[in-house]
Length: 337
Ligand SMILES: NC(=O)c1ccc[n+]([C@@H]2O[C@H](COP(=O)([O-])OP(=O)(O)OC[C@H]3O[C@@H](n4cnc5c(N)ncnc54)[C@H](OP(=O)(O)O)[C@@H]3O)[C@@H](O)[C@H]2O)c1
Image 1 (tube, rainbow, N blue to C red):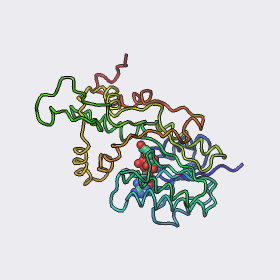
Image 2 (cartoon, rainbow, N blue to C red):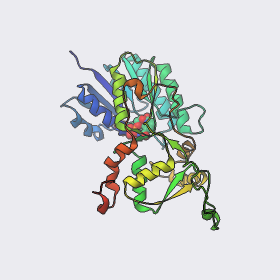
Image 3 (cartoon, rainbow, N blue to C red):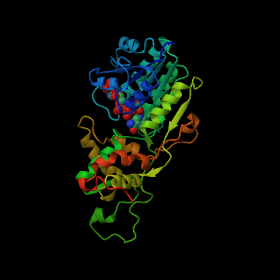
Image 4 (tube, helix red, strand yellow):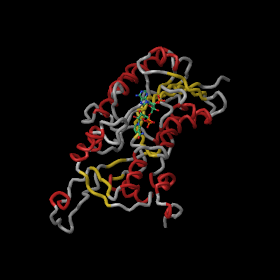
């Protein structure tokens, strides 16, 4: 019996390594279409000799995309960016490249395309990122019939940006921001007395429903395994909705770094983001601040984990496994009561 061949675009990234590990365990032949085959070689030991093969491809080079999908049974597109830099714009990566991959998959007679978008993708969003994700979904649906779209919420896991970034920040700063709180403490603004019972945090800021990277990978594997899933959109989020403040509390608890939480006005966050945007891979952009103004939780109207027979893990269950390394050395081996 011939082995299934799956091409993964963006497979060297955060979700990619977890997904490829699972595909390799199933005996699938995995092609990792990447800009840098040398850098993607770290994936090879996840499978048997010759089972995982990085292959070169370039956005805009249609022949290289056609080579990457040729002979594949299934294709997964994990390519995405959080901020624009040079020629890598949201339009070029989330829309044009996604369309080109979908078109190539159609021409190559690929059986199934799984396109990874994002929770909150919407043509009406104020965020350019979220609008480009929505436009990308439309482009792939038009180019490949029955594309399966996956919309993950903010993802946590050992290599995540979000939780690691805030846990790292807590190591160097005595105060941590809480985005999306309606009140700015008068104290901070004018240096005058605030009422003792002031509700500094309101409802705790923007609400998010983070999902574990391993669960997202399991969901993609389940979709690939089920030939009856066609043309659906899956919303993948964790079991729990948290306010921004609740997430900060969780990060500080697990990283053993008690810090003062200050409600952070979006206008100030945008101001700092404007400066940060001069750096490659900025930790915050104005568009991300815009994104943070809206809750990022599932609509409940689309299929999700339950429809794939999966039960996602909570952040409380997973975060201790990798945020422990941010603890001060004396607290690193302490167990929570
Ligand atoms: N992480 C999250 O919290 C999250 C949440 C919702 C949705 N998503 C979406 O899920 C997908 C995968 O996310 P991820 O966190 O695994 O992404 P990631 O690690 O940031 O990147 C995935 C891959 O995209 C490719 N890529 C990045 N910039 C590129 C560029 N300018 N040109 C060509 N390729 C480029 C890279 O592949 P090579 O370097 O190998 O070429 C990279 O490994 C993305 O579409 C993302 O938007 C992620």
